[in-house]
Length: 109
Image (cartoon, rainbow, N blue to C red):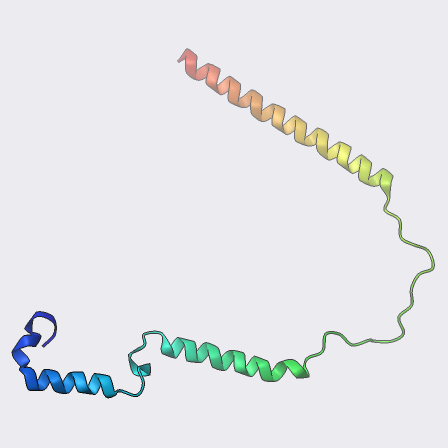
């Protein structure tokens, strides 16, 4: 009996239930997502044990650096930018022309 019919249980039964609720040591069995949280906690605990064993990198030999700095190829970058800009402009012009011509044909109909 829950909710509206709880008054029919009697005062002794209700007082006993209140006493049980007040004397309860832990609310863990009544938490909805406790199992999911425990699973996540154990997963991260296992990761915590593995992390000290992990290494970021391992040197695979002697590291040699180049004497000459690497320069960006300015001419190629500039040419690529110009070509891509022209292509983008042409596509935008075609799209604009298509939109305006379709609006004109809709007005005529």
